[in-house]
Image 1 (cartoon, rainbow, N blue to C red):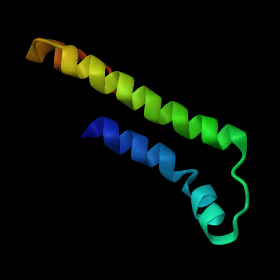
Image 2 (cartoon, one colour; image 1 turned 60 degrees about the vertical axis):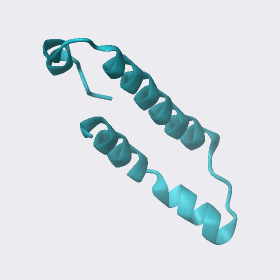
Image 3 (cartoon, rainbow, N blue to C red; image 1 turned 60 degrees about the horizontal axis):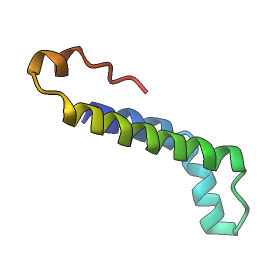
Length: 66
């Protein structure tokens, strides 16, 4: 839950590009597209790593920061 919250906060910083694209058709800069894709990819990787942890201690020690 914490990981998803961090990702949503980071994505929210560039959400206006998505809204602008929907409203006006203005292109989204490639660096913004790449950054958003990277955030999603990092979350997927971290979720897989978390799901692979086998003890509560390892889960508690896991670094959730993006």
